[in-house]
Image 1: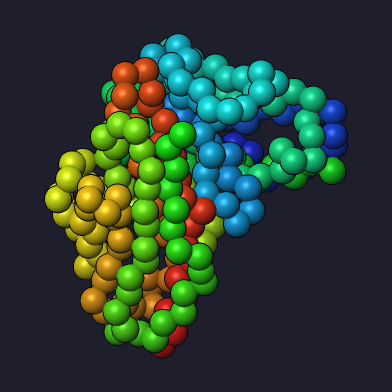
Image 2: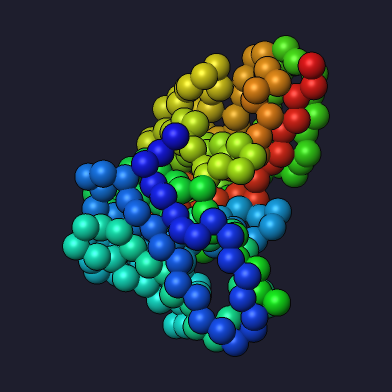
Length: 114
Length: 114
């Protein structure tokens, strides 16, 4: 069991709305990554934050944005929700931001867009 | 771009059977390779990793060897248990400067019958 917690666990929104997902990192970790996992697929990299700065981004539109706070917790914001945004959103924390370290995943937020 | 391809599931085995889940990758750099496991209702957990060619990662009876010549990282276990039932993801991380993302395969569901 990891020390990464995500909230909420489930969320239902309608198309066009905005959503904020939250993640609390494992103690001592300074890097947070967010992934989108569609049903039956592997996680897709959205972006990574290292010491409050975005330092990597996947192929997601600008309506996906994030923040990392001084305590290294993080938020994922999605504007103008689309039906295809329905997925499990996973947060992963790590130490170092170099891309080779072990990721510690939370259990995810299941987002349904109707 | 970089990619990971793993065998489709589901894979159904009897307890104590041998397991092999195939994984191949495409990468322009020199990635680290990982196997993550996802149990029902939980986030992903690192199972094992290898950081350079010919390295063997091992954990909980599972093994995988980094084969650069065949660009493969197949997961093996000599005798599976019911508790091994889960979804297994092969992944790579690109260590190129400025690239800190992990790329995951689509996952292989394993079901072990008593």
